[in-house]
Length: 107
Image 1 (cartoon, rainbow, N blue to C red):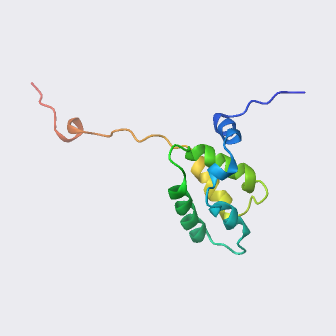
Image 2 (cartoon, rainbow, N blue to C red; image 1 turned 90 degrees about the vertical axis):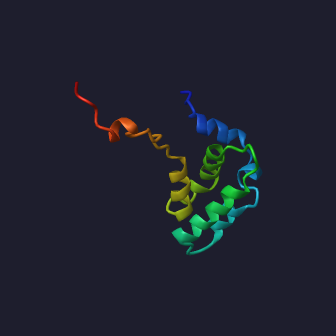
């Protein structure tokens, strides 16, 4: 039997209980609504983010919710939002500054 290595997000998600990941059951209920739209899912996701307990990691919660609900409904609009929330982006670096605005003096 081969051992698989879990990513850090998956490991944290396994430790987080569903009640902590979705304290008001908003995500659970969104999967039960027939014909829910992207806009409605975004609104629910914002409410969900505001209801997370202090100190609860949003990445771990998103991974837990995706593992719990997303696998059973891969085409659901909430699944796409949960996946998008887990994608990491490059941190924006400082571009320019004074050196980019002020011409250098030639001596």
